[in-house]
Amino acid sequence: MFKTIGIALAFGLGYVTASSNLLNYLLQEKTVLYIFLILGASFFLIYIPLEQIAEAESIQNPLSPLRTSAREHLQRRGSF
Image (tube, helix red, strand yellow):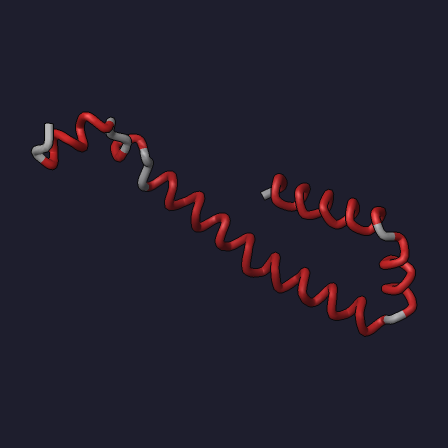
């Protein structure tokens, strides 16, 4: 979870520093700032639970038994 927050924070800070006009515009126009904050909050409210669900599913159903070689696939189909 901290990795996700770190990535999002790094992206946000990099984007703001790349375009300093955006920061000045956001400070002048409060409605744009509120929209940006609401969109960011809604993204995290959806993304973080999805990440936790995906992590729990990957622990319950590991992919290691599903990894088969091409030879095994051919043998199952009867082509080999």
